Length: 122
Image 1 (cartoon, one colour):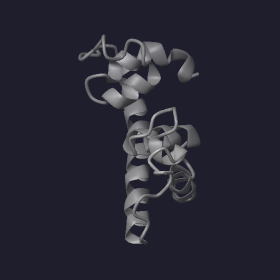
Image 2 (cartoon, rainbow, N blue to C red):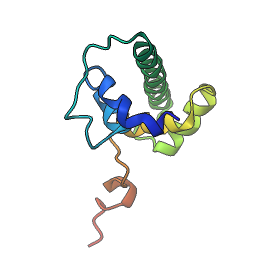
Image 3 (cartoon, rainbow, N blue to C red):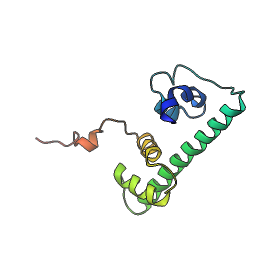
């Protein structure tokens, strides 16, 4: 249900969580901002979304720190997701994946490293 209304909810988060706002609706999230939510129901929804998004962000950051401490300098997103999901089973995988993509500076398309485009083959 959340994703069906993402385009409606995105502006509610654009001032506090721009990355998540753009994830919910890449088309308009940067164009529209709602700073004051006066409706108590919308405030509740915004707080709940913020809490869920923050939990996903925190899980990814903690997992990256854990992996770095274990010697993984550039962990792959799959590795981060595997550990983050094991350590945070209540956070939906969809949110963990989105957080990992944002935090690890990945987009929906593959990065150069994943495609091995930065390898000199001459």
